[in-house]
Image 1 (cartoon, helix red, strand yellow):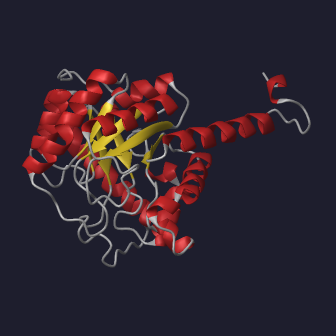
Image 2: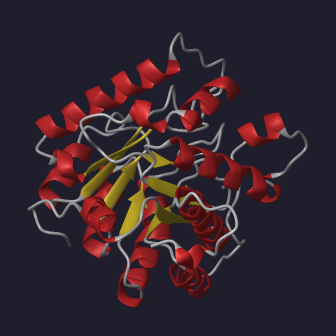
Length: 297
């Protein structure tokens, strides 16, 4: 278990690696809109996680409750059964930090004991009054996400007058709430919640302006991986057909500036896309039109 003194896991990773970090998604939910591989047994999950780390993932996010539009909550017992064995196994076998994607303090507490060091709470501490205390006592990192409504009803006519300002204001309030509960601000990351209670135009505005959602100096996480807004742009694409749209959205957000982490299902493809993008950025930054990349120091 992490100590009660803040470890600022994500801030440390950002100091050690080029931005953005890549967070691999490990869904252990039978009703998730995209499982990232269709694995079922413990060893399959461990193998898939190992592949993500080998491909370059800097951290992994393990979730046992689907947050797809229309999803219903699962019991604490069921979520514990899904995530705790996975976190224990991954903590023994992998060298990267682990995050637990949960809205329940009991699940967060057990996951931190099992080896996680980050809590990714899509409710931003609103669903469970004990969550802040659990995170504070553990000295864990915390990811706070914006969502209008709940997964069950979030896509029922969401509306914003100024989505960038409203999301930023919400995240600022939640960061201050977390800090008031004893959570070190240096250990907090914010997420504007792409696809969570958002219209297409809202998602596009947030992806194009990630820096607008930076509050209190916290790192910004962007997670557009295989989400349904891609289908609104390119109709009739199923979740497993949205890799190209995901890469386009993520790269645009990185290029726009202000994106510190990408939460993705497809780690290897994301790492490759980032590598090519960085090479092109470095090349054009040298002011060269015909020279070789390695001529630029």
